[in-house]
Image (cartoon, rainbow, N blue to C red; front, side, top):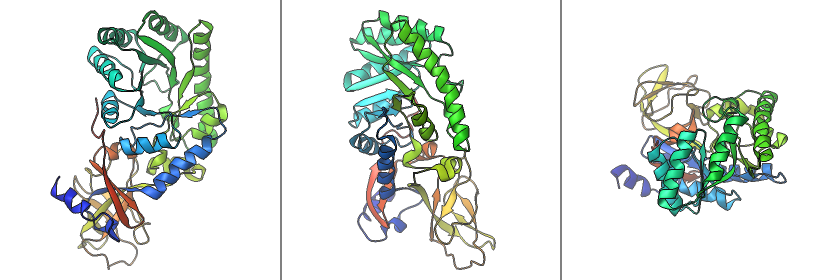
Length: 378
């Protein structure tokens, strides 16, 4: 245990311990997290869909277990390394959403299938599929497979019914693989501004996905699972009704990107923050905090300070270790050591920079939990 972790753990349960942590610290507001998980259940109640939240946002067995306890059938992982870490921590039903593409990854997937109660993977090319068949047969393990379909993003997935049918025929010939269905994820839709724009984009992509599902079923290939969707398109996904399984991830945290995109359409609240402390107050127009490029993902909008004093200020990166926060109008009372919390620009890669969630209820630190799959990029 590091000195900073020991210092933080000594604060658990103490009044106002939230504001005494070593910084930068990743803060998770448990009341808001639990409310977001409940809210997703309310949104999907009465719809013929199952929930399989994406763990690439949180990378945490604790949060995954809470989502499953609230009704999710399992979780998604972006990479096999995430799945390995969460399975080792006790999560048993996992879909790996990046296609199997090589012998080494296929071998790891087959090995994980021995230890995971229910593992499914996706494929979008015969090379990866052939590698998966060889690994499954060599290790004597059955694996569920989804065909990844490109619904317009162009990142992964087959782009035609003919390509999907070719893969389905190969899957059907293997005694170790079972075709479970298809996956179609439109990542480029998630941050579109406006509910109507998102609905139109999703409808076009789902038409494409539906055509491929129809072709597979017409050819005799079962397709019980149609998996996809995300936080930004939840309302559209439910309204259109093509997907049987939803994969939202960021709804539990609600970073600045999603807050901007969904605006008044959102029913979720921000639960994830990075806490920093003021380290210099000598400049007349700003203060300097100890959270810079190493503390936040930098691919979205700037981090946003929250709270009664700094809530209307602006942040700029001030180097690897530091950030610049504009002073509130007329403020000269801020002192070194004062704490400021920020909404993260993009939650997934920000979480990946940390080893622990500092979990709070109100002003009290109630737990420090490891981020099991942090930095599992393979």
